[in-house]
Image (cartoon, rainbow, N blue to C red; front, side):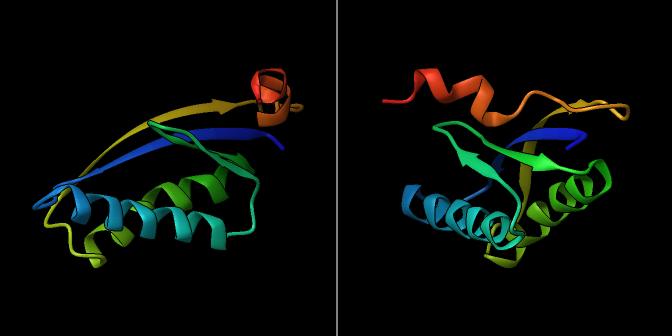
Length: 98
């Protein structure tokens, strides 16, 4: 695994329920990719190969629009190490899980 991303998708939504529904569809899309991911309170982390992750980041915006958001903002964090492995989600968070 050469990369990991954290994405926070912020759809423009008419109310809180609509916002949650749109974000749920984005998370379902991420789950459908088969990559290792972890949902947090503010963002979702995903592990994989750089090019595949960049396509997923792009598609997350489209999924939000297709789910009814008239516009969407996203905050993205990327860790990329073309020669070797990046720290895994598990290594970064396992000791903090309860």
